Length: 382
View 1 (tube, helix red, strand yellow):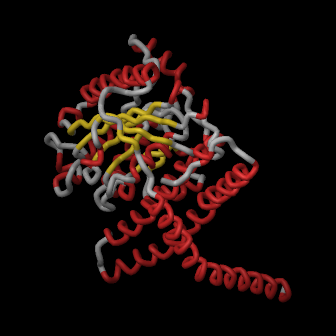
View 2 (view 1 turned 30 degrees about the horizontal axis):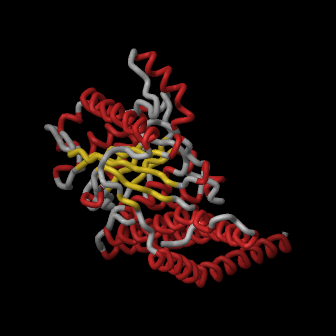
View 3 (view 1 turned 90 degrees about the vertical axis):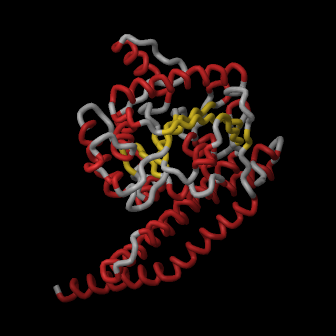
């Protein structure tokens, strides 16, 4: 297990120096090394796609290369979460048994650290992380994380009443075009529409409007994206001719995931990178419940009823967790991160970065020099 900052005990000046170096390292990896490596790889893969038109080889070779990059990206961010001190404990069903299946993964949203929690939970489930597909809020598109996911094929969502139908239509077309073609597996969605502390008031207004009791620890989910995934990629009723599921395997399961932080205190990323957890408690719990896909969920009202029932159960799970420190009586499973895997991950990124810089830097320098020379000659002639 990699030693985290929290395991150092009382921080000395040397500890703080090591911490600062580690912060600079992971920030550099996230903002420079990984993005540049991914972008350069994407440039090379574009050439591969052009060659494909000539040699007609399977698109899956391209997809496998992308999956390798996203899997290693996931591992690097997981190692960063481990450095932050994150200690993740799983409850409920064992999702490793369905890691290689096609799954719709629904999770409550508490803070930005949720993404690191899920990536940590996914990293040791063989074959899961390289083939996952996230539905991501549009605000992240311009970040290094968003750009990396964009190259991998993430779908960016910009929900609002005025463009809801267009977004759902675009999502359906995206899935039909890419989900099977690029051999994606898990589709990850936060269906509540935002972090819980930001939408508590909206939850109360919604519940009052429709005449139902508001949830205390989560919010009634927006079902549009989840139902679009179910109706597009799930089991067909009688309209299979309209989708790819006549020739490609449909979704197998829905996983209802519940995240919980001690005392309802999520952590902001700016604090997490310095391992400054509320009450110095980095323990986070995660609960899974696996449900086989049902054909009746193609009916939006039936799916809405089903998912509302699941979130009512989620609210009770969270209430129990905040009260007792555990979700249920199932055997807890502590997620470990292997030191050897961490070292290999860092070596992979530095090796790939060095390889790409060995051709990208000279090429870029030549292009810049040539452009400047061309501009100067034009100016002299003018």
